[in-house]
Length: 110
Image (cartoon, rainbow, N blue to C red; front, side, top):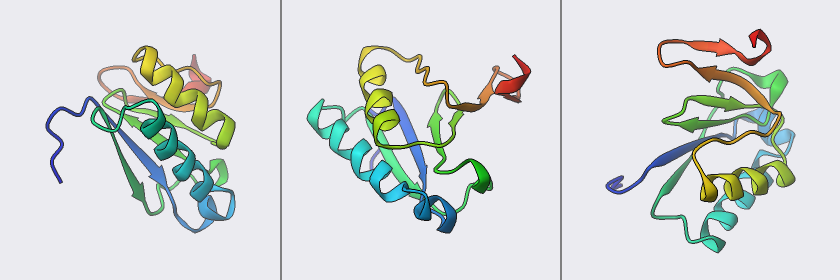
């Protein structure tokens, strides 16, 4: 796998609980939108196993920003990719954790 030229990496949890809650549809939606918007050369996706946040799944993690998104679904996935096309700041009201440049923080602490 060659990541040269990629600016973002989406880690999409496809562990058992997330899959039960729709992770495969989230994965297919994200990859479809990346193709539709011609972003496959800028945004790489990886299906992961459990990310340890099962009660909030499906979970998606956006790097290099370090933002964790919870309870992803088809609609939120489409919106995430549209926002990525326009800018680096994605706001879905689904943020679980964010990285402040030094450490991860729980979104509820804002």
